[in-house]
Amino acid sequence: MAIHDDLQFSVPNDNWEPATPPEGQAFIAMRAGEFQHFRPSISVDVAELQPGATLEGAGEQMYQRLRELDDDASLVRRGGEDGMSTVVQRVEFGADVAEGTTISLVQLQFLTEVPESGGDRRVAMCFMLTAEAGTISEYADDFETFLTQFN
Image (cartoon, rainbow, N blue to C red):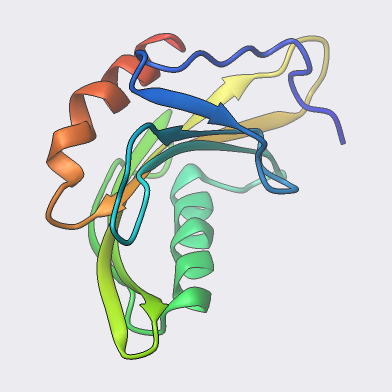
């Protein structure tokens, strides 16, 4: 299903490189440079909201997707309430990068409902910043810059 075919994404600065997103994802950009275990990313998922669905419910689905990767994933914080136009959440989880080596990752998720022109469909966009837990704050300003293009 095509949602917002005309939607354009731009990287926040020259430190990010657009990449081919995995199937089902609308956009992904990877942080330029060399990283020992994990290359930070900014990504976007777009999905249709069913009648009666809430952004908080969509946020729960995003969290559960990460729990499929790591049973110990934890939803550290969720902001927003049913009926609001945005939900922000922080999910911490682990990823195996080599035998016997697991790293701690954080994904900041910003979900918002966007108006769909010419129809009755409701569309949610989930913007995500994923990085190692100890470095996530280094990329927060870039993520905020990325988000401002949609205000």
